[in-house]
Amino acid sequence: MTPPSSIPIQKMVEEIFTEKNISVDVLRLDTIHETVSGNKWFKLKYWLEDVAAKNYKTIATYGGAYSNHIVATAFACREKGFKSIGIIRGEEPSALSHTLKNAVAYGMKLYFLSRENFKNKTFNKDWNDDEVYEIAEGGYGKTGAKGASEILSYAPSLDSYSHIVCAAGTGTMLAGIINAALPHQQCIGISVMKNNFSLYDEIISLIDDDKKQNQFKLMHDFHFGGYAKKNDSLLKFMNDVYAKNGLPLDFVYTAKTYYAINQLANENYFNAGNKILMIHSGGLQGNNSLPPATLSFL
Ligand SMILES: *Cc1c(COP(=O)(O)O)cnc(C)c1O
Image (cartoon, rainbow, N blue to C red; front, side, top):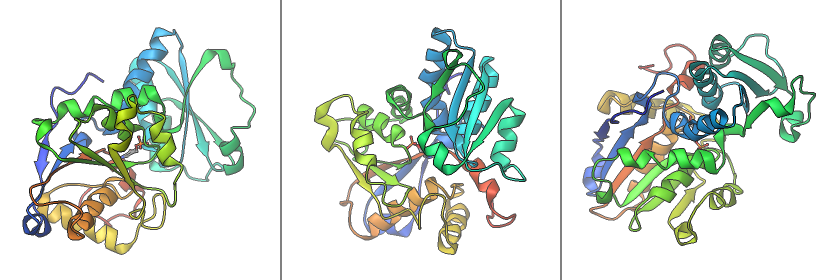
């Protein structure tokens, strides 16, 4: 869990980008770590520091059965010598997902809650609250955003970009990026949930400087039916991108983000000469939930 010394950046080749005279570079956070990949490494950084500083020995956090945050937290806790508890949305399945199996292998103890109880966080804890440090679902909060703000320090010639685009689940990563963006840059978040309009205020509350509140836009039209929903055209798009550019995408976050960039380019959202930086926020482990051979890569 040492900070990456550098992160590769990849220039994307698409006819539509050439035609519209824009460029799109991808910052490959997916390459930094096999398990704590992508933005999870950054989002957890200061949470873990706080746990250690306050002398806690156990972390509890929340997430779904395919959550990148759950498995990343489990792994990071094992690395740091903390115990970990995963509170999982939905009844216990007869077979654990690939994600949860890994979390258990890293020593995480799982508790399953009905959707209702998960939402209200009503359940009998068999631990003492004073002894357990809770991290919100997805690492949401200023502590998570602080870590995410360090992502942009890995972009070479950051000031050359006009737009920075990333996926938004809880919006923590986007908030960190807005906080670190230069004044001339527009940040765009691709919301991966359907009609999640409260996301805007959740992001605003993580922005340090009021002047930055106009520096971002959320796009709500690229969820493909909702969180973790997909269709054949999205899967084909992922295979095409891999065949042409060798870039692996995950179907929950980064495929929808890169699809959105292509679509926005097509709709002349960008101006000629614009330089776009997309954050590849990782999450490739989630592709393991797809039937074998759905993707040409994994
Ligand atoms: C968790 C995750 C996100 C969402 O990050 P937020 O900070 O919750 O918006 C985006 N991309 C990937 C790959 C993720 O795993």
